[in-house]
Amino acid sequence: MSYAEYEMKVIQWGEKRGIVQHSTAQAQAMKTQEELDELIDALRIGSKAAIADAYGDILVTLIMGCAISDLNLVSCLEGAYEEIKNRKGMLNTDGLWVKEA
Image (cartoon, rainbow, N blue to C red; front, side):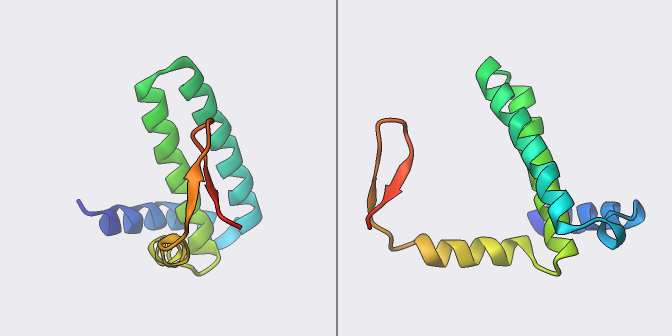
């Protein structure tokens, strides 16, 4: 299945459970933070299965937040890419990209 097909399945799953209709973008952002904390824990212990599960759960919460906000996650990604594609900067010693001022 393509990403778009999985995205639609996730939205339909959220609609069947009332998430899209009755949750909020803020609630989904808080859920994303919870899943991000789980990702950090999974990275600390080095469990590839737990890391994969956390990334998947983060995507689900992002898709739900976008659906609630009447946004498309791929369009959000496209906008972010267009903003960063020509950025200059460097990778610091912690492995983080730091853009030029």
